[in-house]
Image (cartoon, rainbow, N blue to C red):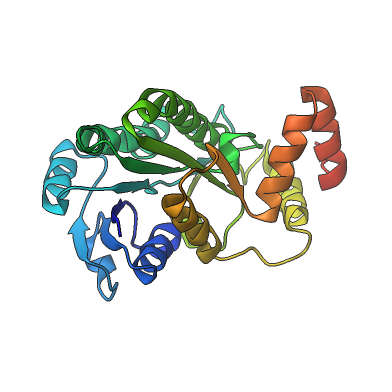
Amino acid sequence: MARALITGCSTGIGRAAAVELTRRGHEVVATARRPESLDGLDVALRLALDVDDDASVAAAVAAAGPVDVLVNNAGYGVHGPVESVPIAEVRSMFETNYFGLVRMVQAVVPGMRQRGAGVVVNVSSVAGRVAAPFSGFYAGSKFAVEALSEAMHYELAHFGIRVVIIEPGIIETSFGDNNRHVGDQTPPYDELSRQWEASSARLGGGEPAPGPELVAGVVADAVEADAWPLRTPVGADAEMIVATRAALDDATFEATMRETLGLEW
């Protein structure tokens, strides 16, 4: 049994991971910026945690006690043309998606290293492997998480700490409710937005997007495994995109995806 601290447990993947790890017998410390959003979540401990705030991180980690597993899940998206999104919005997103993750790692990993064991699961996205229209800044934050995680893998394996990157595709959660859209619904990019909305549905083959439980199951499997790949795409769309991208050069990948998605922009 491991003690797992999970960020961003108010909804979606974080909450589902808290439920799944608890179901498997682990002690879960569920955290969220608004602790009232954790009411009713049956876990070992519920804590307030704002990953943007140094003092909040320090207090939550101190209250959690020794942590065997850290699941960095907190995050949100800012979407729009690169020329249109205010830099302040981009900085705010990076503060959560990237620097928030760094704060958690720097607070928790020293204890893991001293104990000679631990697992760090960083929830990235298929957008951390392939950037799409209007996702430049969100994808940038996830590309940064991927780079950081790869460096951590090389640094921390020596101390018995495993690093796992989870890369979900489109998942049916309330994640979109927290997203900010700037400039993608108005000229001159509204036509691209219309085409992209229509084409994105094709990635799932017409099937409904899977729920966060799919990702939670993969997170739990990775935590419990003796060994696990550094990167794991989750969902048929993510698996397809990552495999196609790895097999093709830039121009061929673009041509293939344009044809598959019917994108004429």
